[in-house]
Image (cartoon, rainbow, N blue to C red; front, top):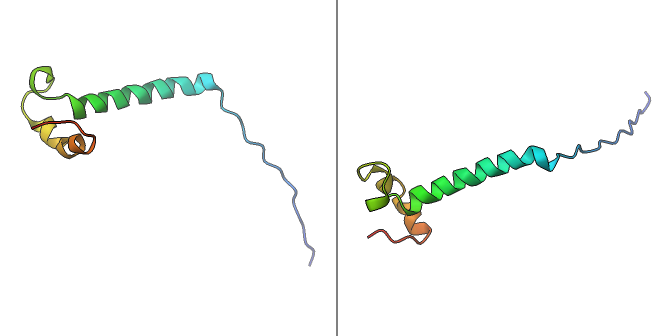
Length: 69
């Protein structure tokens, strides 16, 4: 029986920044939208009528330090 050793080196492929930028912008917009719903979706600035969104994000609102009562 012989021992065969493969000496393969794997080089990581760099990802250009111009390919990542649209995903970073998209993620930032999603985070801003989530922050709006957690922090300001109630009362006069409400986009969705009723208290459904407020009740859904109520614990997250307290966790992030937003007053709601």
